[in-house]
Length: 584
Image 1: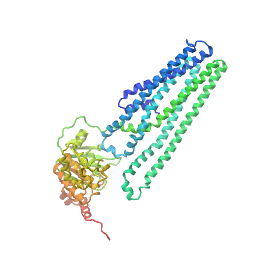
Image 2: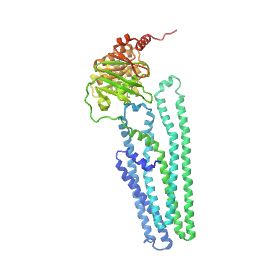
Image 3: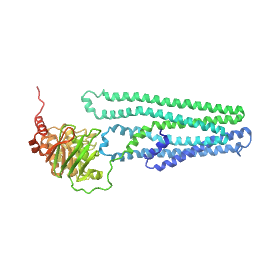
Image 4: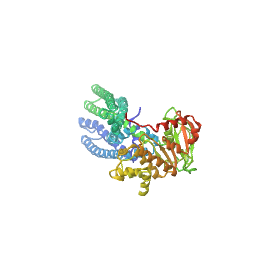
């Protein structure tokens, strides 16, 4: 069972820029609780002094009134300072968490982003952020304060009357049990609704991003997955609330039972003569305040528990370990070359690639071909270290990628994959991402080679036209031309190209074929090839089979001459080249 303070405080310390600032905040909270406890403990001797009209513990009634006045002033000052320090930590959390999450995210391997993270991250850094910030502002400080108050009251009760001190002490395990049961119910409720809340967030992002496809299918007003996600989230939230209500009812019922027990014990002591009537009444008042303090501790613990899933989400990002890499860049033995040595890799238990070995010499173009699911794109992702291999080695520039820093590896690669993403910026700025310090003339030259100049001439504001989030103002083929322009501008020694054809018309295809020819003159090119021209012009072709092994490799002529799978593959591509839709 996780205890709120011992578990949450260390986690919160990772989420602020100044963890040491938490120490004085917690310290002042404890002092504020100490003063509150002393004020409650002083009630017993003060009332006894008033009832007996004599000094009690060396102070008369007037002396105790002075004690109350001093404690009241100290309490006001400590509570003000406590709130100020706790709010300072909360505000530091709100200021720091975006940077901390951003820094950690930027260090993760690219494969980390293959998971459905959009919904979770958007919730984490928006609405849920304020809710998480409340932990220190409104919960941890008061919880520490009430804990200190309870300890002081128990100690004072032992000094006043050991039997009453024992009664209060015995009530503590009962409240600890209540707290554990209540927080367990709250945690159970969170586990019920949190996955559905996350699914709903992902569905909302999906619904917003896929409006084009939904409208074309007439589904924009009735997107069943989103409706189901909303219904599931509502049902799980209701179940979660019942679990939390049960915890609160249990807490309230046991609290009232403890109060009744304390009053009964105190009344019995008064009737038996072990306590005078007036001190007995004073102790009943103290017991009521004590149980109220313990009840506040239970409620604070439950409040912290309801926010634990939010901390879990943030903590999962902040503790996510990037792939290990050396501190210093390696000495490259063969710049521009690629080699896979006995590589085996799978996304789960079933390998996608099995014992793959091939080389891409510097300055050559190698085409990867094969059926869907044979691992062609996975090869390129391993080269760019989206993931580490399960077995074998991947070398870039003659050095294993695991011995290179991320900066060094990325500086050698330009990647043009199927899912091209453009930023909501100008057309020119999206090309310049490849090399931000490049002169304008070089940017325009790269754009000319990739056929982006034609796009700019058609846009209303030319090069200054914003392309929209993800590049939605451009077609799929146009976005790929922009990505190739980035690669040309970057002038990396190695280019990884996933030559998708689904979004290309004749014009785009012609520009991309020309761009690939330009890239092969300037860099080593490994291309997942679909076009006849690209495949036939490659210096070497690697044919992957459906089971993730290399079936054959060689030049186009050599593979055609050998017959077999490649010949059938080539014939089908060649036959499909002339396909077109006709009107009947």
